[in-house]
Image (cartoon, rainbow, N blue to C red; front, side, top):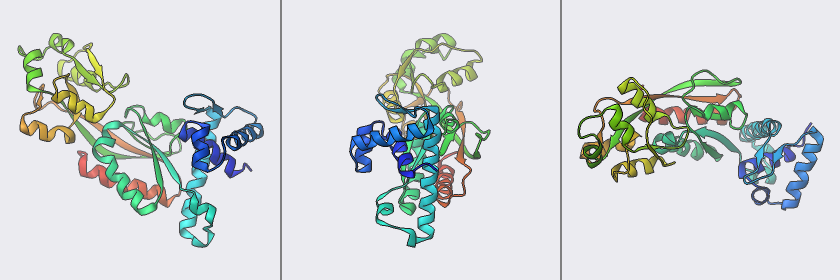
Length: 299
């Protein structure tokens, strides 16, 4: 059997991104962290951590991190059910759940899920941000225990539940629309007007353009990796973008933003994929995620 302290150290390094920060989190010296990792690597016979800025896990390291987090989760559940097992060391250790979420969910409804969940469990949550089309990759790699994703088919070892659709509106300031689309929205005008994208993975603007024009359009784009910066940039006339309806509905009602094509939203169906573990804590997280999503997402 592998020492749980060694496994926990590896998981902490990957979560914190460095040996030094892991040492502070574990209340030990960086030298002790290095010794633990070296001992664990010797026992399994392979490299587990790629030293860098930040430190990352190898494929084998990811598998052990997932195992470490699963063990910690099960022990957390057991201590809650059997308080007599609690000791000082366990009390000082906080269970951390790693989940992958798309930025727009985090900016609109997912924090409400976290608020309800953390208040009832005392667990910590490590949220990793990625595009909704790619969050399931974190599950496949064993780097998270759950994810909000646009992928419906269950990842191996996970169960999938439909949450609903996050509705997006193609929005810009009235002055921006007057400047770039005075003669109407065409493939040429859309190709010239600056758009907003979250990062190189963000395809929402291109998907919407393809849907309304029935052809691919190469878009000029500003990159802004923030949901709220998207709205601010649209208000400021920097560009147009696919903004989540909950973030722009007041601006639309007040006329500060307008739709490029009224009545042509883009709905992105989201799913909650979570590891198939018999864990009350994971079940609680799932319940709070479903409740928070139901309050915002279209069914």
